[in-house]
Length: 392
Image (cartoon, rainbow, N blue to C red; front, side, top):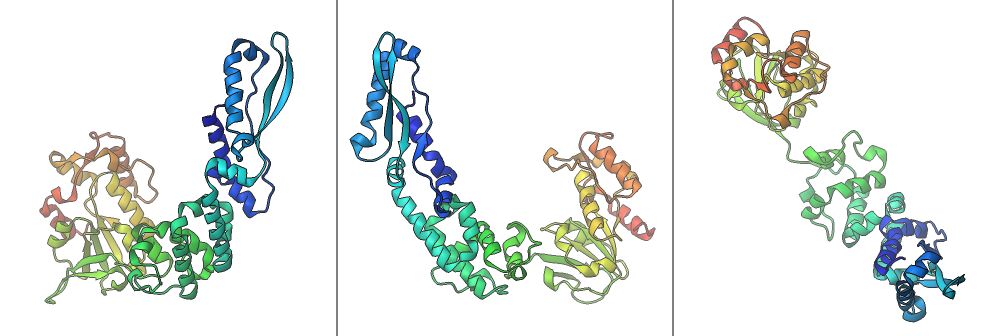
């Protein structure tokens, strides 16, 4: 026997799933809508007659026949051996949309959805495929849907605006609104704009993904580097990534540790890049690095070799510096434990045979559990010797 709570739950499903909204958008017949339930059996009538009688009374009391809206009951008459003829509900159904919406309490919300769908058809028809496929998403953003449409319309008229979000002049929409709705805006703009009006190769919104995809300016990562072969008064510089042009050297050292970068010895025709707060992947857009001899100095741990493999995957001339078995063995007393959540245990595709051997030993804990030699623990004399010997 279905309770009122269970009936309410089943009646709400087509609304929560969006099935009803989809049918309305596509002009499909949805009503009458029947709620499945299990009718009491003859055995139940015999053993629980009073409970069945009370259940029938409750079902009737909440039905359209009494309340004026909601579900209708259809009955069938059975002949019971002990109890005689008994009239039992055989169907619970909603004859009309208004009856059903009143029962689940969504009349006003549906009217709001109708208005939003109509507004979208008129002002931004390109995103109707999303409305049709994800109507519940429209309801999730119902209070701000008009503003979302305004933002999309702005980009249709000003694609790739080359401005900061703060500079976008959209009536009724401020900077914080766009900042806090990048996810849904990205989804809408992908439909609202022509393919050539955004960068489809950029995914997600992390690392300024929204700005990069839709041609907005953003606070670019600063790349810090030092000229290692210069008598100029300024040798330590930080520049936005897009302004980091070829400094005219043949060799580039990369180390993520700031102190290592600040103390890196003088090397002819070279620079050192360091303090990469955004990680080495921030360098991947610098095509001029392809022609340089790159030397990467990272920690001797699984994560360090993962970074090396990524860098070499983008720039084939990359070599490792002080990331070898001999350096590790020389500094074993200074090793620490690599945090478990930082370890990289998958296969790497861009290591030399000696690097691969050491990486395998580290990830399989052949030397010690989660062994890690941080680059700043390596003796400075080892760096000088490696540079003097041309090991890089």
